[in-house]
Image 1 (cartoon, helix red, strand yellow):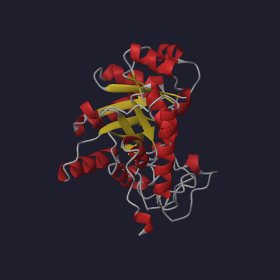
Image 2 (cartoon, rainbow, N blue to C red):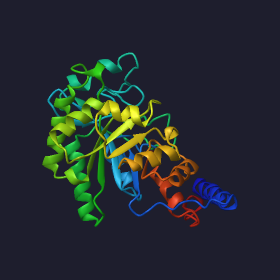
Image 3 (tube, helix red, strand yellow):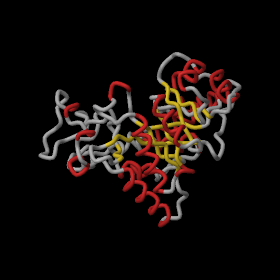
Image 4 (tube, helix red, strand yellow):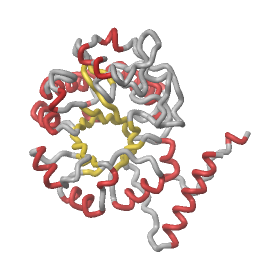
Length: 312
């Protein structure tokens, strides 16, 4: 029933757009649909299960976050600590909010990190997310599994959008300095042979500057959540990145036009409503990052009624 309601809502939105004289724009074949932390709305974030779930839908890119362990491993995690919202300790007790930052991934070897369960409790912010016992994977093991799955199932290989999680106040406490972080990540990407299908993104301009200095060919995206505007943000970065990636509410037609004129693609985050997706597509964005890749079909196939599997 939920899927039928989504279909009806999407159809009504499309009908309204047509009646108002502005037909919805159909995204191009190379439109960059990105699964945020895999498919965070459906499966525990930044886990193997989440990325395999995203591959069930027409995503082009898998978006993920990485941090660094004490033994210099590149680990998938949004925070450089064990988040109280989703993680349980090895003994099965929940991580408390008062202690989460003391469970510092930068001070743990991966052998310890992998003992934490960050999926069994689900995520109260995402009621549709399926609880599943999950550990934080290494970037290397995740990519190898995904690449093998695509080979075995004749699926087109995805692109990867990897965020460096760093801030100046975290240096040498929760994360290595940007140059070290960038070198560790680039080494993994190069060893995995995915350079031409990888974008490295960050809110931290220092991280992007470090990557640029080490590899001028890899695609870079500047993440933005401030209201300083395009010019000020590019001035702080010091160069024009391949992608400008703002919070979706900061996007306007003027911003898209200005970014395109400067040679950048615009890929906003994190967009979880069909109507908002369509509005951004109408503005001319080049991709969308979403927690719910299952909603992509509502844009691509708005008049195709889904199978009523829930009513059988």
